[in-house]
Amino acid sequence: MATAILDLEFENLPVEITGLERYNKALVLIRLSGRPVGQALLPVFGGRIGAREMHSTLMNAAGWTMWERWLHDFLGWDNACTTNYVPPLATVAVCTRDRTEDLQRCLEALMQLPDDGQEVLIIDNCPSNDSTRRLVESYSRVRYVREDRPGLDVARNRALREARHEIVAFTDDDAAPDPLWLRGLLRNFDDPLVLCVTGLTMPLELETEAQEWFEHLSTFGRGFRRTMFECSNLSPMAAGKVGAGVNMALRRKVLECVGAFDEALDTGTPTLSGGDTEMFSRILASGYRIVYDPAALCWHRHRRTWKELYRTFYGYGVGVYAYWTRSLLVEGELSVLQFACQWFFRYQLLALVRSLLRRPDSAPLDLILAELRGCATGPWAYLKSRKLLRTKNRQT
Image 1 (cartoon, rainbow, N blue to C red):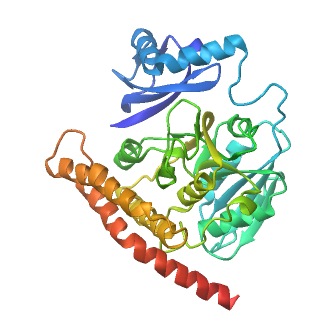
Image 2: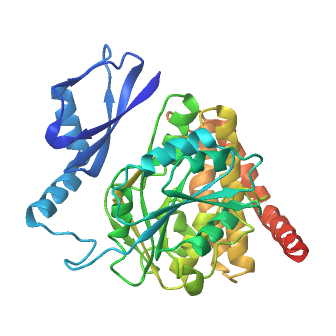
Image 3: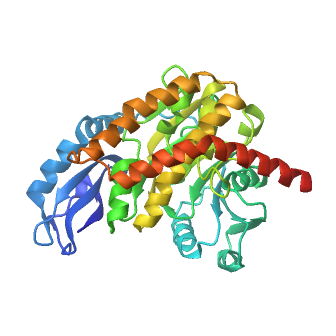
C-alpha cells in the first residue's frame, strides 16, 4: 500500500486523523511554530491515526531538534542572521522542458509565496511545442525566457544571466515550494562568504513502489539541523551531502567567483546529471561556504514508475562519475581517484552484496546494477559531452 504524506504542526495536533483507508502508514513532517523540526513514520490502522500514538511518536522523532527550536523561539534568537540584516531581493528560476502539468503545480505554489519583491523567471529549455509559453502567459507576475540550446546547466546559466536580482533561487518544475521557502533561503546570505544555500526537500507523494524506493534510497532531504559547509568540514568531492538543485539559491556573483555551471553536465547531455553537485564542489574548493537550512522547504514529486526510477539511478551513476572526471581533468583534483575507490568499496559494493544475499531492507538489485552501469559510463559520457559542446559552440 502507499504512504500518506502529512504536514502537522506539533503545537496544534488534531485529536485524530481519519480518511486514510488507502494507506497503511503515513510519513509526517513535524513543524514547530511553522519550522520543520523532524519527520516520523506512523502506522495507519483502519484508516485512522489516534492522538496518543501520534503525540508520543512525533515527540520522540523530533527529539532535541524540537527543543532547540523551541528555545530559539523563546529567546528570539535566529542563528542564521543578525538582527539588522535585510535579506536581498531574489529571482526565482524554474528550468523546464515539456512538463506543463508539473510546471502549473509549481507555479501555483510560487504564487503563494509572500510578495517580498521577488521575480519569477521560467527558462523554457529547447521546447518541442509552445505549451509552456502559453501556460506562463496566464500568470502576469511570471517572466518567460526561451533557451534553445538543450541542457539543464545551459538553462541554469541563462537564468543567472537573465536574473534581475542579486540572489537566484532555483527549484524544479516537478517541485512545489512551501510558502516560506524563499524566506528560508534568503535569511542565510548574511555572511558574504556564503555563495549558496540549499534547503529541505520532502516527497510530495508516495503513491507507488517506485516513489517509496526513491525516498528510501536517494532522498533529497538532508536532515533538520541548519548546517554550514566549508572545506574544513566537508571534502568538495562529497559535495552531494549539501543538498540538491531542486532546492538551492546562488549569488549571481558565483559566475565571477567560481565560474558558470559546466554545460557538459546534467539533464539534456550524455552525462544525465551532476551539474548541481559539481557546482557545490567548486564553491567549497574555492574557499566559499554553503548553508543547508531546513527552514527552506519544498515538496518534490518523485518519479512514479519503475522504468523512470531505473533511469534515474542509472543517470545518477553517470552524473557522479562524469562530475568526478571533470574534477580530475579540468580541476586537476587527483584525490578524486582515492575518493571514488573509497565510495565504491564502502557503499556501492556493500549495497550490492546485501542485495545479492537478500538481506532485510536491502536495495533492489536492478537499481544497484543500474547505478553501477551508469558509473562505468560516466567518464566516457563526460568526454563525449565536452566534444559535443565544443562542436555546438563552433557552429554558433
